[in-house]
Length: 293
Image (cartoon, rainbow, N blue to C red; front, side, top):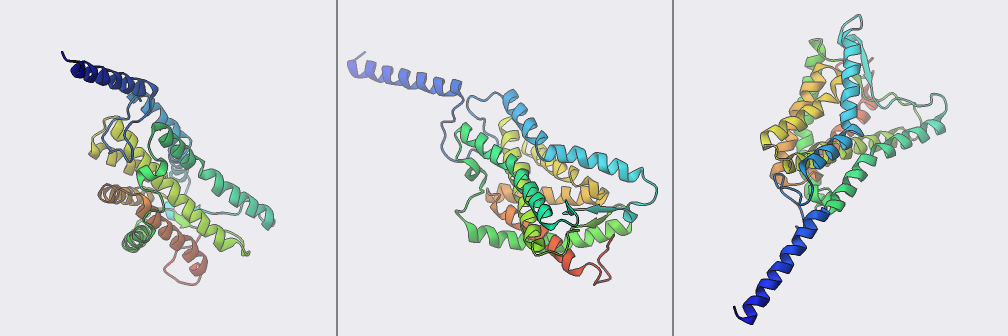
């Protein structure tokens, strides 16, 4: 063995040792996004599984359990589902607008803490934070344009599906907003819509699909898990809310896999919820086709 060969062998050994140490320390060596099916270096599947369950328990998984309990209460209550109401964006301090505003902003802000936690976990993994799942400002116009098209298609279908499900008795009457007529009403409704979109799309699509892929889940099973989770925390609206949002979840997962970004999904979801919240505030009681409580 020549000196150069021995030196090359020592270099390879050193590099191998360093790589092993990086794996043991749980540091990801690959820069940029990691594909859905790849394994995070140094993170055992049981650790990833526990992390995923904890993130969901602090966010939309807990919302899913809450929605199931609410649904059980609704179906066991005398009367049909359509005669009951599911109210969103309700007043937190009736008759005290400034205190109400403080509670609204507090709720919106704290609801985004799980998103900050996901960003932190991705950074610790060695990935570039939320950029890993395509939630950044690198492509604002394409994201918004794609989101607007998706919102237009899903919004029209969603309204028709909701009215049909309620008419058949499968859904509660959804009241998107019940805020007082104060100056901050519409800004809060818009902020609430954006908060819902960021929370759901980052966690239920971007983060969850990444972690399930790293745990070895098949893409089809991961799609099903993400979609069922999305439907579960809308079950408080009724059976129609569950299946409607589950179908939306399937579409969103497929679009995410095609585009590699949750940015368009956040835009679409924001526009859908803004349309629902603000539209209801403007039209409730003024048009005959829109059910009210």
